[in-house]
Length: 208
Ligand SMILES: [Zn+2]
Image (cartoon, rainbow, N blue to C red; front, side, top):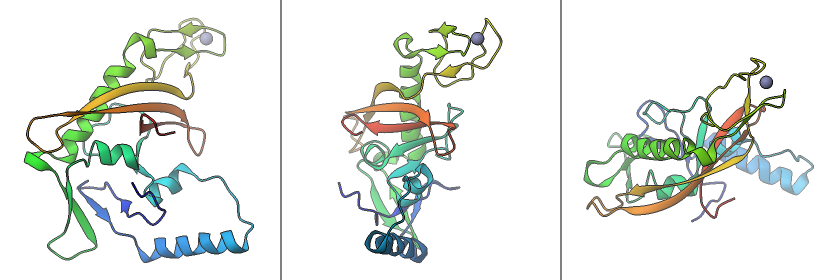
């Protein structure tokens, strides 16, 4: 899969089924970054927000279904293509606007596929092997879900999920709309985002 920086940006907005094509502004940004590479020195860490804007990450926070997680969720482009968009076709809008629509086979839609991913991840997170919370007071809990708020029963302070915990799970995708489902192996990590808030990222197993 080509993950070049000029890949179109996904925009899961109000309808969630359209993407904005690369805008002039984005082209200018890429041009600018190329200029900076040549003439430097402008080196900064590649932010999550920038990765979403560039299309490397797909923001799932507004993916039409109630997100079961209180933290922002994003999927890598590869994970998104293998699950949410697999077997779909990007069609231009009839109005000739600057958008494309994802048409999935056999009446499937983004909403349903996103639900499947969220549901399978929730199920995996709730498995005892993935539960771990720590408190500054030293209390350690293996009972509650990783991505929910948790108050320490010992000192009543907010506990934190162990950072960057990896949760492996799989989702079945009906790629061709014929009922024959393909298992896609995924994993999620929960870690600090651009402003140190907790964020969840879903990737294909094998991706880093
Ligand atoms: Zn405590």
